[in-house]
Image (cartoon, rainbow over all chains, first blue to last red; front, side):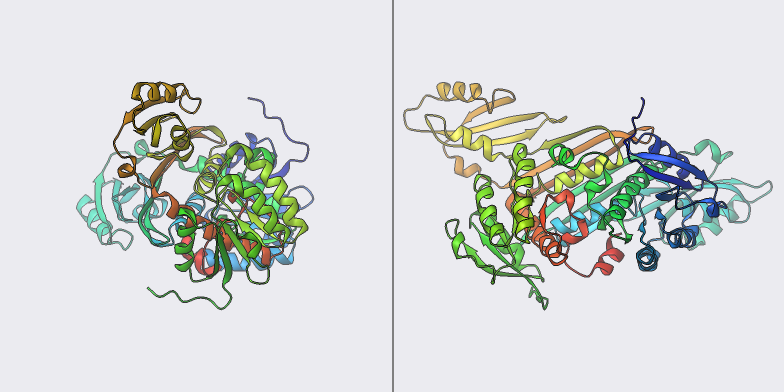
Length: 295
Length: 295
């Protein structure tokens, strides 16, 4: 397939070239309105010039997002990230909003699938049923946080923690560990079960010879809300996804770069989460055609 | 439950007091930021005054929406409707956009569940998987268009046409007919099966004594897309709803009145479909709190 680029494509760059950076590259190359002008390693931020780039997509770990986004926005360059530390999103939003407004730039933050497109679905569910409970059930899929926690335990050479949804927001952890030579499995298992990352969930620890053979970037989510529209109870909406995790994240970041460009063109400078963006701005193509096709 | 109203509630009125009008009334009364200042019958449009009302919600049939919305917008009054004639939405959008801009008003059109919230989900699915096929599978639930078509056939006293989803956008029609005295069931059945509304789908015609005993405003939908994120195939997202149809429509219209008020406050005058509205603007409450809860 040969992608025909539009006359005024958005010039984007990737900062950080791991799984997410590579997925962004693929999604950008498949888009007709994106021109990928540069791929920068995480330590090459100072090479990115405002004259050459409209939007920088951060493929770096969440902990590096705040300071990198601040530096880029200070130069007047728009940014997109998939910052996923839920408890810190509101603070990041406020901080980047100030800097983006001051420097006539746009930042779209937490633009992955959760936070990100799942946030949009949760928002829509609440609009349709203002009263009720929404459950987010993750998996089956790898949890990076829990995997890193398991790997850091003494005697563990490599680990993989899978998140299994049990419904109503309750999750099982399946932890596969590959031991260092001479390590004691029962001791490792006991340490994992007592770790704060695992102590609150049903957790199973399983010894394997080679964690690498289990590796799989598949993930999934089930979002469900049973609630009340007006005075009518028992309204129900459910969303299910099964996906390749980095591929989806990269695609959503490219869609959000499109929205950032459009916000910037309209001089609507500032910081946005995905629930603050008109969904049509995520899509390539002419507005009237999209309305005809999708509404 | 006693709803505490905010200090500056949106003053809304309902025009048309059928199933949808009553559902709007219920949703408005359950909202803390809406003040329902008037309920008008469909022939009382001229009684609605700009000084007294911020947004009028049209509970009238779709065919009456264009001329009523035009009259209200011409007076500078914002409107919300659930216009559902898919092929005419783009034209209505253009026409109302002009009038709304000229008169410093906002119109949110096609704000039901389909078109409406389903459109937002279709939009999101396409953002996540730009390449692929989305299927919209309606039902089980009553189709108003098909019910009216069946009712208009000679020999039919009353009818109900149920839409049953068969997947991949294919639907079965279950048509329940109550005959006029002396009418011939086989003749009625044959006429229905040849009617353009039914000729293209699998259709079953069933004779019953009393259609009213089958009546039920439950409906449902299944939206599914299997597509490609970047270069990764077999990404899958699915949405299911089972709902009380007028209750959901009324709730969505009230949420859209909130968005109309916010657009109007920001002087972003014009006509919007739901895919052009930031989802957060549909929700009651403080923006930062909503971001903390939902993102």
